[in-house]
Length: 83
Image (cartoon, rainbow, N blue to C red; front, side, top):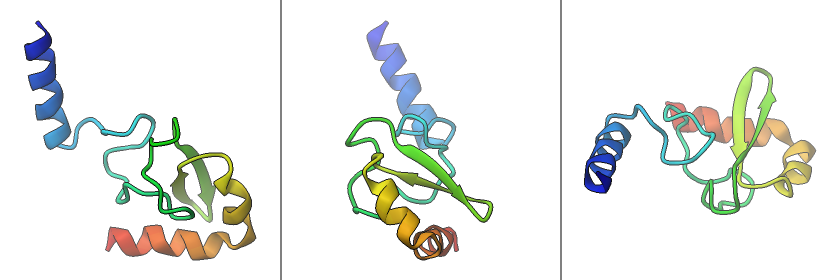
């Protein structure tokens, strides 16, 4: 049973149907926090913020302060990763 679940999870992850990071859509282009460069999910569930219609995922609440100082800078990182 465990092997079947592990195999199914691997297939879904590989197909981009399920995100490897809890709470982050599989279509999100980054695996690291745009503020701290830490792995998303490495410090618990990532924090989602939206600025000018763009969703940005941060590794933790502590990164919100720096994000809010210059949100356009960090949104640009997400948008450039999409291209």
